[in-house]
Image 1 (spheres, one colour):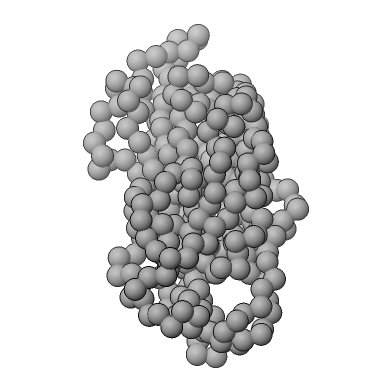
Image 2 (cartoon, rainbow, N blue to C red; image 1 turned 90 degrees about the vertical axis):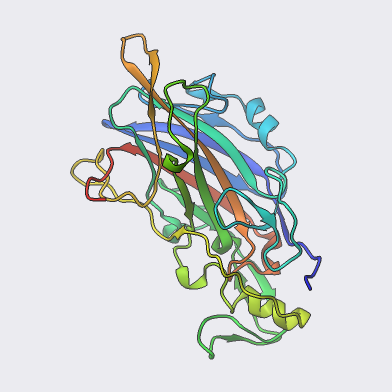
Length: 325
């Protein structure tokens, strides 16, 4: 038996900013999203010369994308709790009634193309600074941060793994939607590049829990699961198949920022194309799909987070692949 009750977070991207910046000779890319209630407006800006360009359609590469382009992509999104084991196929719920989840209706999903003329061809998600962030602060790096919701529990339940980790009826504390967020990247075959002959097995998938707290991750018998069981008097089977989730991001050589020290968050490898730039340099290109969702099987996916406010920023970096992995 499952309960047909859906938690939802209305997603408003007040500003979605893609920024390609060069610090000295180092190329970075940022995606910044501020999420509140419903979508009111977005913007994309990219400034990095021609070292790294970005596109939403694989055809029109630019350093600046218009607000209207983003409004067309992201309007009418409502984040609901969804779940996935592979970062590709999503269903609604987790602890609640299932059914197929719809991208950009129940979770955020969009495709990006990157291209460069550099010889460093591997794209990494880097620099998780979530634990250093306050909701109203600004910082370089990848982060998910939320304002938090004060909630009084209506039932006794086990909050953490220890038997003494109890929340009692009437107890009030703060809960954060950011603790249940997942960021996924799926490398895609670039149909616009006739030289991209890779098989599906060669393409990369990546799921990241920016809370970096594996102990409160997927399918735990405490937290939201325990509260659900006490509230509904329904016992659901915990999932047996767990997603391959990362709880850290790759690091770069502090002396050579174009060299990755590990490949934990390697999300794409740009492929040679038959195109050249104005200087006759070969253009390398790649395509990914970014998914952002509330993981319904997360230990922190409480009903209380439905009205929380979330900010998300992603930082990408092109580097050489770590040779020891």
